[in-house]
Length: 269
Ligand SMILES: Nc1ncnc2c1ncn2[C@@H]1O[C@H](COP(=O)(O)OP(=O)(O)OP(=O)(O)O)[C@@H](O)[C@H]1O
Image (cartoon, rainbow, N blue to C red; front, top):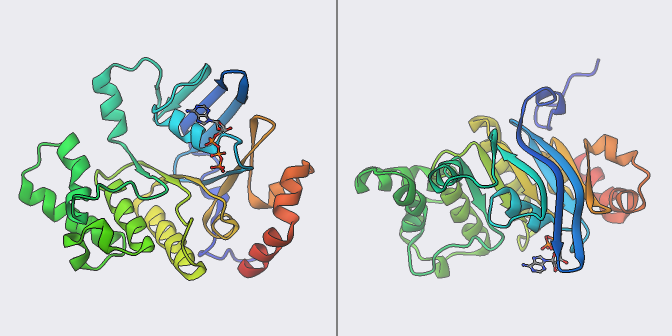
């Protein structure tokens, strides 16, 4: 058997891990528009799952429903073993503290410094003294690959890539078990995007995170995702890249075998 390249995702690593997110029979409607219709999905502990699909197929809505920010019309969502519907407020907040989210634009508070932004979840969810919170923020800012002086800067003073890293530092503030990323490399140049992918990969491996990543970036899919979930026909089809390359569904075939898909795979080869 050929030796495995350790820098590449190893799907067998997570193949038997229990799901940390379990979605069953999800139906999402906006008026007459049906976005998801009987969608099932398991996200395994310790995997990086890339979520792709055409525009408007409901990737962001799925992310928000898993986070409890939107509610489906039907179906069941379990997050870290808890049914998210009808959770008492204290339990919902406790569950929220076990997840970290990086929204597409970083979603930083513009009137706060980076360090203050990173401290927001610590203030919301812990009673840590300010000096300890500041020290944790300093560590997370470093983990996100920002220089120490970035903590004192305001979001308006940062580049797009630095804003993503600051948002990532905040998402890591509470040592989450699951990291949700919404288009993390959107708006970055290819070198910045590759560096961000590598950062996510390193953090995921060193911290044992589960990562749920909505993305359009074929390079991210081929380089750091263990499995890929494709939203098609109001449901989801999940597999490794190799499995999806064999999938005859027209959209999936075009996506992975079209010119951009081929280029991304060749870049990885
Ligand atoms: N609050 C809302 N009210 C009404 N319709 C909505 C709402 N949120 C989303 N939708 C609709 O649901 C569908 C799925 O939206 P969503 O943002 O999840 O798509 P997406 O797959 O993330 O798309 P994109 O890749 O373009 O970001 C879209 O048709 C959108 O217009």
